Each structure stands twice: as structure tokens, then as C-alpha cells.
Amino acid sequence: MATGMHQVKLNLSIDQVFHFIRDMDNWAPLIPGYKEHTMINNQESIWKIHGDLGVIERTVSLQVTITEWSEPSNIHFEISALQGACQGEGYFHAKSLTDSKTEMTGFLRMKVVGMKGAIVNPVLKTLLPKAGRDFTEAVAYKMQNARLVAK
Image 1 (cartoon, rainbow, N blue to C red):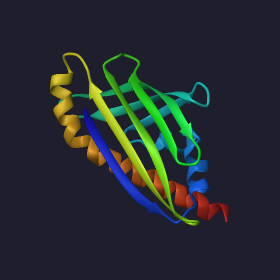
Image 2 (tube, rainbow, N blue to C red):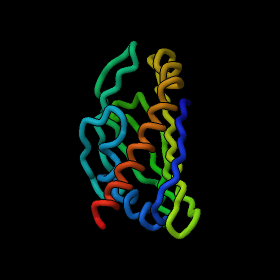
Image 3 (spheres, helix red, strand yellow):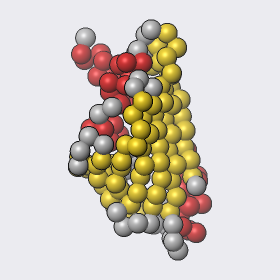
């Protein structure tokens, strides 16, 4: 499986970080390749993502399901393609450094199953670390700016 993990330090309390992350509408649009998403309920959504892996380019529909909410530090989710060829997981983990500083870790793990997996998985291994970093940085940036606007 390909993985991407990145950590950022935020000038936000752990409660502020969790308040932002607990709402998928805040961070779903920040995933690389995002086209749109539809909320089914507060734990499930369908995301349309456009992927360009060089050898394969297409838009896929992914079901994203929150599997764990542990306030104020963890949100875990599972990812599965509606077409069944892709599966994965991810999480956001927050660690309080001080009352007003938090370290947030974003993590993604993905794999493609079936015949396409032999072609796509090696490419994913090179692309997912950057996608994980970009995603975590985008979430951190939006979180910081949402806080600044709210002041």
C-alpha cells in the first residue's frame, strides 16, 4: 500500500483543530484532485476525485466513512471506490503542545486492487507522499485562515 503522512504545527488549541476537522465539509474539498462531494450523513460521504497518474487518468467516486471520532485528538476514516478497485484509509491526529499550539498529523494509505493494481500501485507509492503532504498543508492553511477570519 502507498502511504503519505505529514505533520504541521498550528497556532491553534487542540479544541479548535478538532472543531474544524470534525466537519468533513471543511476538509473534503482540499484533497488533491477534488471535484465535488455529497454528504450522506455526518459520517459518510461520496467524493469525486480526478486522478492523473500518468498512465491512467480518470475521475473516480470514493465513499469516505468516518470510523472513529475520539474528541479532541483523532478522526479515522476509510476510503473505498464505488467501482471497487481502490481502497484505503486515513486519519487526522492532533496532539496538544500548549494551550494554543497543536501538532496535527495527516495520514493517507491507498491501494488499487485487481489487474490495474500492478500498474497503478507503484505510481501511487511515488505520488501519495506528496498528496498527503499537500492535503495536510491545505487543511492547516484553511484552518488557520478560518480562525483569523473568525476573530
